[in-house]
Image 1 (cartoon, rainbow, N blue to C red):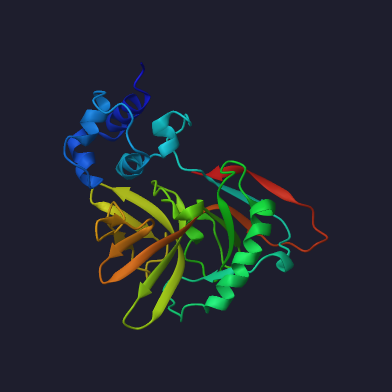
Image 2 (cartoon, one colour):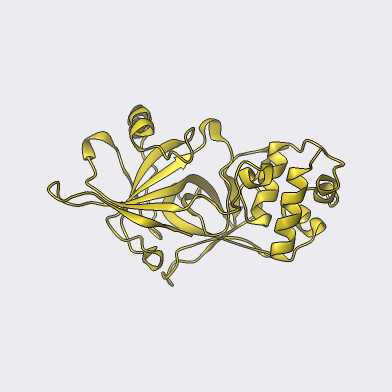
Length: 262
């Protein structure tokens, strides 16, 4: 039987110039675990294991399992359209600005709206992921064509499943400062290297990168999906950003950018 996962892992190792032991250590796994998958000693690796490996290999789990021919994360679609404010409760994102957490009542309102957003704004490439709307309140991502006032569609897997952090993808991030009771919600680009994962704001030199571990926080022997340590702060990956929209007057036509962000 063909070892698709093993061959895909081998292909990424060769593309990145890495070795199985090094990737296993980056992923927080046993030193021989990646090599065992390549050699077929583990015929059905767990999805949790593949999610950990995907980060250091800079690819998606779908690529490793053969469900996608491209190792890249889902690119950002860019659109110009009118955003109907009556159907969404947008979250304002601004790097370097710390605010009090939103009241639980506001989050419940957003949860009620989510069912509508899931139908209207879901990404057909990720049909089972749930949608959330963000609005940029700064130009911290202007270097990659995301500007103040742009609307962003973020998607996440149901039941708090892990959001893969692949090189070049864009994510919504919550950074909490527990002793002050404040949080920053920002949009950042994922930069994966041998040294770890950086969440950066390209072109915003005054906003420091968030440097996180290659795997989620292990709390009492249980991995907490999408939570990471970053110095003295905790970092939560909220959503994968898949769509950027720029509001136009209602009289304007709708335009689609034909390209995607790599």
